[in-house]
Image (cartoon, rainbow, N blue to C red; front, side, top):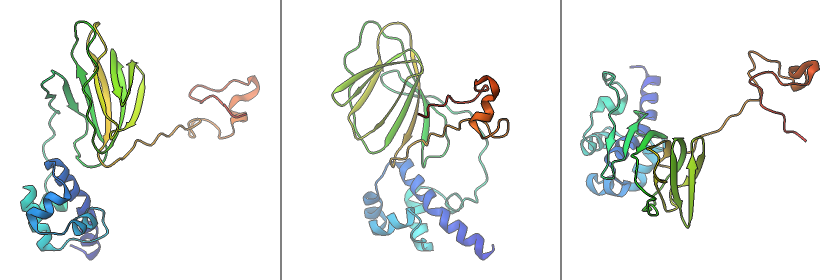
Length: 224
């Protein structure tokens, strides 16, 4: 392996180590106690500010139950399998939409139909940031002291350190919604191009032409 390849592998290992730790649901403090590696060292390795030694990688691989090939990114790609819905005690089904455990997680949630109007959802709080979009039905979401009812097409974004909980807002069928969750506070980045550069000119006035109407796919001009 070339020197540059070794450097690239070590640089990428921090992200994989963080993903392996998050998959096990343990903190840096837990790992430090189990392996004897200082919390500050583990943090610098995960953020790419320090390259791990072979001894440290071996300790962490053993603690996380993974292989050196997986941490180095040289393991053979697994056979693709369709994601399996996860079931919860409240009959909610969660369908994972992303395979990678680091960074933003994407899931589709389905809440079953209910009879009558449910009580205010039970709330939880934890580190992270969540983006939620309702696809079908009516979703009741409790955010701190506020309660909102969202319908298809509604989007809400919030810091998950705020107590929050969701429930089917009432009879009428199930509720389907998408969730993007950043465990380290990662947030989706919204990009709204005014028009497609390959199809339309970059001058809004030229794009409208003599009729003053924007072509299809062009966002309305809201400039003053």
